[in-house]
Length: 336
Image (cartoon, rainbow, N blue to C red; front, side, top):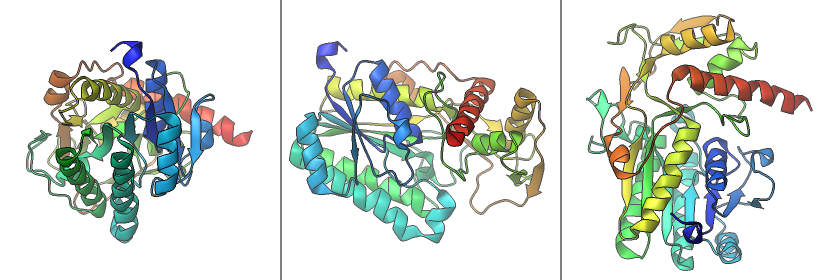
């Protein structure tokens, strides 16, 4: 895509973990970028200097209309929302509000403003507990928690809106996102995060006493759950390529898995963190959590066949090394 076709993109939740990496990927590729974030879970320092920043909520229709007009927004990358699965079970209305109702408000404002392209941060949680080890886009979607349902409802809305209005969309269903920007410009900064690699690194650096291992009797090679970990910068690159595909074919929408197609067990991840940090982690063996599948691995055939996505950071050690470098930098930032 030539520079003349790179139109302004608004990133919602661009001060958060994945959103901030999408901003970096867009900037690195020469796209004009603006960010809107209410900073409830995002961080102002995560937005690079020179990027237009609006502190506010995507539910505010007047604000969104003003942003679209001021920025001449052509496309939206939508990351704003809540992401903690157990919290969605204990507080489902929060998730249906933040992830579904607010997305509906954002889509409505986008349609009214004539925004033509919409990329949505979806999740493998829409599949629930699939009865296959390798998940394709055609695997039945049967969420087992409000988080997964809230995302699936938004996918449905986008499909219906794209059929009724001149807008196309891309929905990327993420597997287990991890790592940090290789240049340590951004990373996972949320206190109390639940991502395994983040938690393990915090434990290795003395920020946690131990790491809980939920389930040691799964039908896997070592008894612990196996997951498909994807580097956040590779995921951000997939968003940019999806945006280009939407602009190249404005009547086509895309729903694709975002993963590598290979998995690592909980113990393999912890062993790798032990090795890289040279500081063995205390492991607390606990029972399974309700609804955890033994293995959840993506089939990335569709995304690889649809866009020229060439992951650069697939090695588990590299994902951990980048996350570790960011965690050390984050410690320094918080001490300043």
